[in-house]
Length: 91
Image (cartoon, rainbow, N blue to C red; front, side):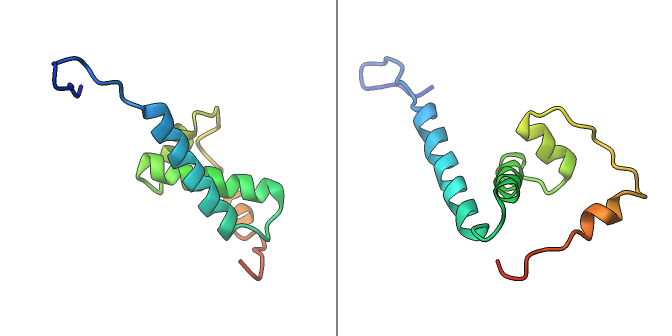
């Protein structure tokens, strides 16, 4: 913990830093996902946050950072349907 000149513990403003970082992530996400539907924009924001927080692109790591209950395995027979969902023509 950081100390001031008299040796007392300095208060860290982690809440302020966290809020600022979250605001920057959401601002970036909104810029790149503007033409998408609201659920797709939320998904995009969650993915960006999860990737940054976990420092990984693995879906299991991203889900862990989002602190949401989820099933961590997708049957391989279902995954092509998810991955081939039509994407917007303009981002």
